[in-house]
Image (cartoon, rainbow, N blue to C red):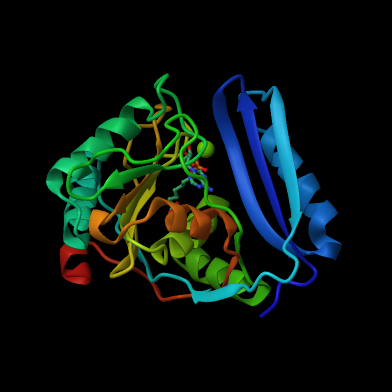
Amino acid sequence: MKAAGLFSVRMRAASGTRHLSGAERIVPFGLVSAVLGQFFERAWSKDLTPDEIVLTVEPLGDTAIQERDALPFLDVPADGEAECRKLASIALQGAGVSLAAAEEAFQALEHGPSPEGSAMRGAMIMDSRTGERMEPDRARGIRVSRFDWSDEASRRITDELNRLGLTHFRTREALALATKVAHAPGIVAELCWSDDPDYTAGYVASPGFGYVRLPLLKQQGKTGGGRAFFIDNRSFALDAFTAYLTLQPVVITKAGRCSRTTDMTIALF
Ligand code: WAQ
Ligand code: MG
């Protein structure tokens, strides 16, 4: 598929140096202005009033688009922060992340991974064995863009997630992002929970077992959150990794299996 007539549209909102919200779409010309309007409303409807909202439109020209199937989605309705963190750690270790690196990431997300201890605009890159931070800019991190659902896959995944009672747009958007990230060269796993104080759910994703959602990776009211991309240092090149995540358009054309389990380890391993 060629991207002729398609545009990358994105939004980020900030208050001073603090990142507040962001969003990404790939849409045809006819939808660009509507999506810009939706993004503006989303940025402005946050509890914290941004003092800057950046809306970006880039024509994708004839860049080839990669089409992907969504990662399989597994909801694990575990109780409490401690249990959810324990399960996230088990999933990360099953994907090839060391216990030390997983704990390093929990600490960073808990306290706000940017140098001022606030949310980053993008993600940390962590060595999956040592936990060493590898992103060149620790305030900004690496920001994934140029990904979206096709219309058909978007309808399908919305239905599937609704069937599980998961109706928030964040879940669908996070699954799209995690699907793109899972195909990055050198990736081992991803950990995420929101910096939004009202959103306590997060996930672990890996190319092997897909997206695992956990309902309470932090306590309600806490602003610490973010993303960690764990990489295998032996097959990782920063330039290729960054180019793929920031420039390669990826459209998810197929919704994957969506299920729920109370026994994560049996479902995954
Ligand atoms: N690329 C890289 N990192 C990002 C991006 C991006 N495009 N967007 C957000 N981040 C980082 C950034 O550090 C944010 O502070 C952090 O992730 C959280 O972003 O199944 O809503 O947009 O319901 O607050 C998890 C979904 C929700 C769980 C995640 O993240 C579920 C969410 P937010
Ligand atoms: Mg946020």
